[in-house]
Image 1 (cartoon, one colour):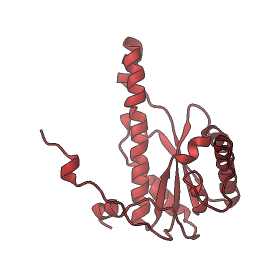
Image 2: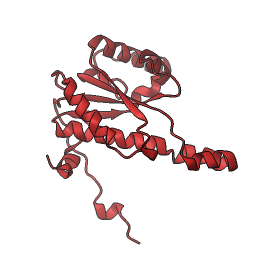
Image 3: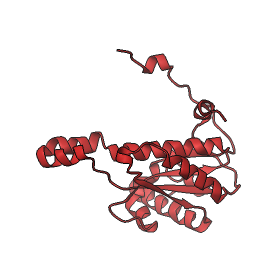
Image 4: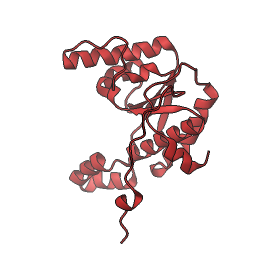
Length: 201
């Protein structure tokens, strides 16, 4: 599939078939992610691919319990939500990232702490590189015929999920990708035309 067709064809999928995702396909997606640009070529991310149904159910249980505690309502039995729909996919890809500090960051930390704090919060080159890796993972998945949903809703239970996945500081869980063969694809929402989002100076 042409790269432009792949980018245009990619969309968030929330209903999956039960077909398992072969390990070699997940490794191809991870390889594509590794080609993404990262600050200082830090490649400061890794993936935990969860396919064991008991483990996926345990992760969902953690999320449902925290959501119930926060909202004061019981989780809806077999219903997928914006927090737990990953559990309805045959593969759950947990994106783990490590911090990155550039030479610019180090200089600002020593010379201008307020600008350093602002940059870490607003710019965060390490997080931008991880996002690029996730994007390339999603595009590779689409090129291989899979659907994905890039999720941050489950991170309402971030500390508990990190404990369950044995993710230790300074690494952290930054996103979850639901992965599988699409069952149904919703209508694709319209995109702004390129002329509307581009300014030439």
